[in-house]
Length: 157
Image 1: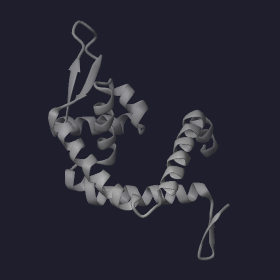
Image 2: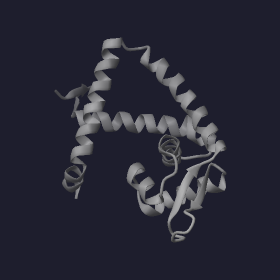
Image 3: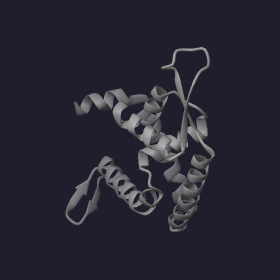
Image 4: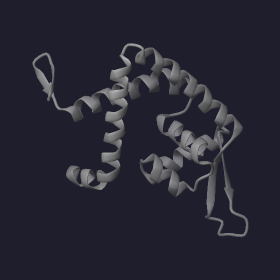
């Protein structure tokens, strides 16, 4: 069922996009700017915390964006001391891995604490039933996006 705002009706996808855009803007303004990293850089660091070292191509697949954008973000993170590059011994020099440093881990842990505090504050405005329903909804939505991403992308071309 479309959501009404004043006289305008919004489809569910529009509401999700508008809400995620607002949350991203708040995170950029209140969290990332202060930390001197971008949302993409945060996703890269979070990925490296969860999956250990990764090749840049894997980072690109998991984080999204363009090859150039991700490469620039990795270079910036490296200059800031949040990641290091390392080549596999005895292999092609282009076979490089990106790993998070201790400074990168501390940054992500600090940011995650801030996110959890803010999320808890918002979450307290909802009942447990509402929160559980949203988790289920977004879990299913993400699975549908994973399963149908290429089809969705083609619809936009």
